[in-house]
Length: 224
Image (tube, rainbow, N blue to C red; front, side, top):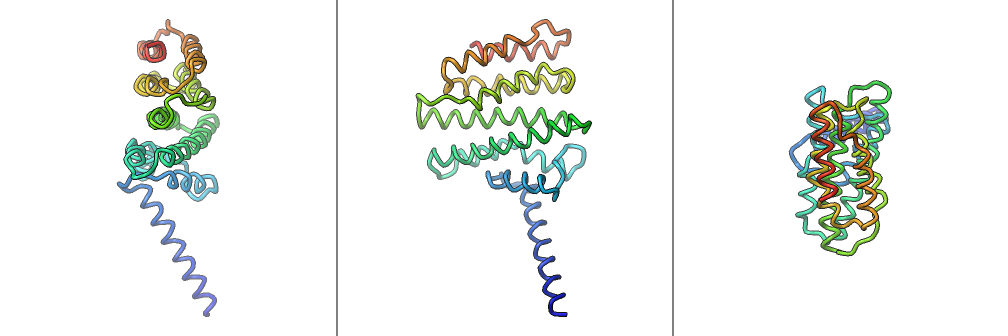
């Protein structure tokens, strides 16, 4: 009887922990880098589904995942620049894992194209936040090969008619236009040239007005 009571008590405690953590994710407080990692591994282990926009509870969770206030919280925290960069780097790395899961879900037929596009747009916001900090800490900076891969991936996505709607392409292009000029300030000359080369591959004569505008936005942002 005592053993059964202890097991029940343990289950109830675990239930409270799970509910509390899920409430924290979906609440009004901005996320920490730990929240990104914690949720990802709960998804990875099958404890919670990949957040989506089709149900209110999941929508609230997804919107928290891409909330700019999460970045503002870190930027305004009483931490050193290096500590802020470390936390943003954790978020960026974890977002790469989220993006891979959304990409695979779309590949197997899940209707998550909007979420995939929004995650990529948010990655650019994170890069922009990191670029501001990097510029303040070390104006010369180092090379950023992983950043170039990520930015190039977004540029390629803008032209991917098989996956993204014109509106989704336009949303990613708008994120590029807003964030890339800040990011470019800490890239090397060769890295900026690589991004320009990717932008030149875009079809400037697309028959869809939204996609044409998206292409123009990207080219203006990378060649200015």
